[in-house]
Amino acid sequence: MAETGVRLTPRRRFGQLSQKPATVEIDGVPVGHARWDRPEFFATGPGRHRLTVSFPYLWKKRICEATIEVDIPAEQTIDAEYRVAGLVRGTGSLTIP
Image (cartoon, rainbow, N blue to C red; front, side, top):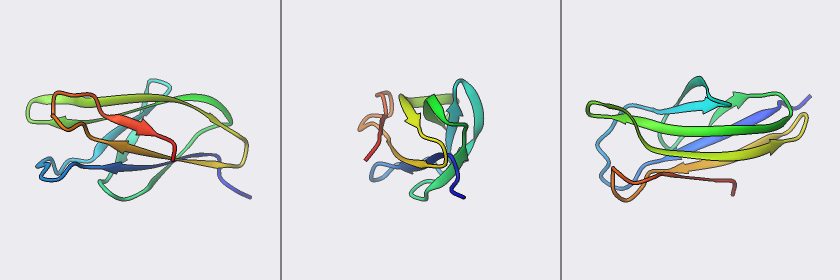
């Protein structure tokens, strides 16, 4: 039986100094962290969900935040990719490849 959820791969920009993992929220609830350049699975129920990813940097808890709405069918895993903005103050991007 297949798992229902999101497989997220966060990508850093070249030279990014932050070693702390990306913070992941589903439907506004923190569900964990994802290490850079490694896919991490987050279980959900089937249906429409709001995925938000950001990361801590220096004294700020959330920078380069990005949000996407995803429809997840039962017993399927959706792949998503988070990319940090070119500038630390910018908005990150979340895509479904």
